Length: 341
Image 1 (tube, rainbow, N blue to C red):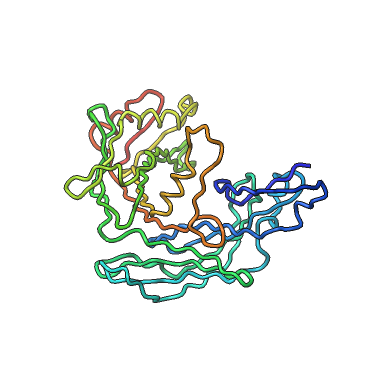
Image 2 (cartoon, rainbow, N blue to C red):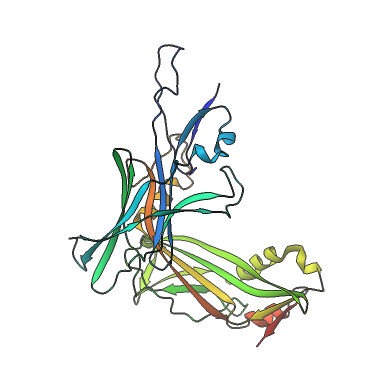
């Protein structure tokens, strides 16, 4: 009979070495509780969530077991908290300044997949995660009491007032020879991700309207690969890909001549996420590999368990469509875009 172990997060590879000299060995006699933690703390969020689950081991179809909530949930509520530490800027002498108890809540909007849905139990706090400033820098330690043991993880906090998007417009039209996104470095960040979101209203009658959003991701960019000039980072992109991605997004909807699409400026949302060192290490280790070596590497900064606790900071800014972007949208055959001023 096939035995399989699955953790709540498919990115974690857990290898069990089983040595036996008899066919009478019970593979489940020495079950070990393995805690899996995943959390991204954001100083700009009003609520921060942490997933605390367990790996499970059982006979039969692992996909069937994964659909049972008790397979990966701890019963009741574990005693979990975030401990805040503060150090004077330029110093590594951290002092404990606060404790943030984590409560549990059940969310009901998880999409169906390998693991049980739509309900999910998560741990959370509404107490603010402090942002670094001109005087102090912050880090947080997660502590989870599990019987006589404590599961823990530590992360520095990414972000500060100096992290900004200075641009106010973006040109995707044919007059733009190249595209560029600029931003000032985010304190304690190791990786950045840029996403464009084009917002517009789609209407088929005066009372039947819905907002649609075309998303274009420019990928993740380690800070070590970015060029810094005059105190800013930048990445380049091909402006024409805006229209290419929009065509894919609209698809066969362009055949419906009764649809009118309305552009309200500023219609472009630029989302810039800065991630901490632990998150970058986790992404790097668990990313695609061209190696023929079958043994998977493993990254975790959770002591006594598996997973990752890190931090991120999100910037969102609405920008105008510049140059001849809007004229090319409104003049495009079958798209039926119209600018509303």
